[in-house]
Length: 271
Length: 83
Image (cartoon, rainbow over all chains, first blue to last red):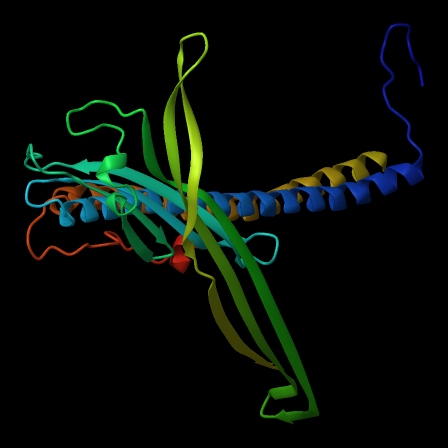
């Protein structure tokens, strides 16, 4: 090889063994990397699509149900209006992208809506109903604020003066627990029969595959409420601070739910 | 002889690229169609939701809650498979 000064070599020599190995390995490596990458992207895409759809669905459902309850529950009388605080919690099963895209474990989706209904207007001497509604997987429970907090414990008295101590009803901790049990059995039968040649039809064997799967998904949602006592406290430096004491905690929901689905299929082929 | 081997290898990679490109395009078209199908659900649901808004917020006697306002269509095979 004539290599002039300052000129790049015309050919890069490599060992024949290394050259052969690298070419074979490159194709396998490309297939492994790009194949799994495409499947991974496809999995992410499916999950993202489902999440976007479900999130929009629960947000719409929360507001629509809150609106319905607000205009149908004017418990304070005609023209009293109502104020609704709606919490929607749903366990929805998501595609398991790491296990053949089957239905996987549930995930929690939640949405909330608060609205005040005042059509045509809230009259002066009436009191708007204040409803706290919790909907867990379609099971709806309506709680009236007045059932827990009396008028004497409101923050403001009837003349509009702020009390030094008042009580508040609020939704406290919400605990979720979900467990998925998946069982799949597959049975394969092969019947070796004789090779029969009859009018150009060749029958060799029959393979039957039975597949049966069962999915159990247990979900529990515990929604707690708190009753707080809030007080105005004058600090030594003259500033006013608000202290908070937890008076009572109770359960709104603790409903274990089990979703069971079974699927079976028979696949047959003949040779 | 050396030049001949080199040419064959170039042809092989072109052939592989062409085959994989067809499969890849078909796969991407399928994914795009699934995405459009799902995105269409979001848009159509929003339209139905807005159209039923006034009725849902009017306290008329005999009104019952209508939910869901939109039932998405099934994903058909022709939408997924690029032919």
